[in-house]
Length: 440
Image (cartoon, rainbow, N blue to C red; front, side, top):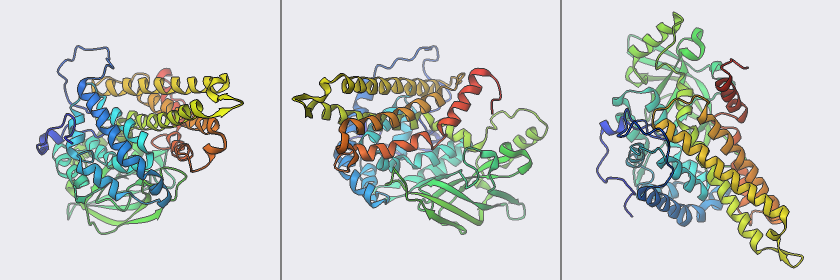
């Protein structure tokens, strides 16, 4: 099947320079900048994309979901199938980056995670590392490193974004991983331990955030590419998780890892200039914290993932309520069940609108005045937890067993109030945006 809306030609470095790999593309300009109101009427290309990903999720992902959840292993065969059709590829994310509505990525995420969250995250996990390169790197660095994160069908590669640490999750200012410049060899020496890294240790390319100047705290951090085969990088503990178990999550240990100077994303001249302004107390333009710059690009996409899980659980519960009979009638004929389903459907629709609005705003280059990106992730994540839990309740004892998928969906959903910014952190970001105050 041809890739919806995607040219079969190889993506060159110029095209790669536009890839954000997050929820939306981030081109410098769009063809109709006067458009100020979003339209969420899906174009024929969007409908084709939606069906294409949905069919893959239904035919390939869902049948494999329970097996890989039980195995708690990276689902290489399923990702290989995604690569064969072009879903796991640089070409695909480049094509969606040129979508002027910004809806390509959210549509893809929702349909893929409707299939299964663990496998879905295995397919899209590399995009977080690619987003890290785009957020901080030069066009040349994007063109060099992003293709190496994907490889080709039959020779798959992975990327890993390494930011969190045992003592530095939400508090990025507590980061301890240190990068020191060796001027004699034009190399950076990196030491530290990262945790909760998707694809950590099994990826060919790792993107690592580290402290360059501890006195500047978050403004003294930078991102580095650790190329394939670099000595000193190893996998630490692999985590056995409550949910999204098909996705590989592990510690990454960096022991005197030496990378060439060109692996500093953005380059040393830009870093030196940014830190000089920070030391002088001037506000840095383009000098956002390396980790936060990446997460800001990915939050609406994460919200779309949560919507996919919620929608899947809602559909199971709706079908069950229409066919399960108690006291001589389908249980959906009881208002308690019917109203619960109505609330579930409403929350899912509201979440999707928040995510699509944030994706559209980001694509148009509009500033999130009221932290719309965080709003979308917060509401969608909490909707996923609430809806999957309610689905289990509607299924009763059956919902608590692995004979029905809502048990797995409820486990998978729980992470969406925790990773890439906990619900509490999202509320803090939103509160600061709407108040203009430094709430702590």
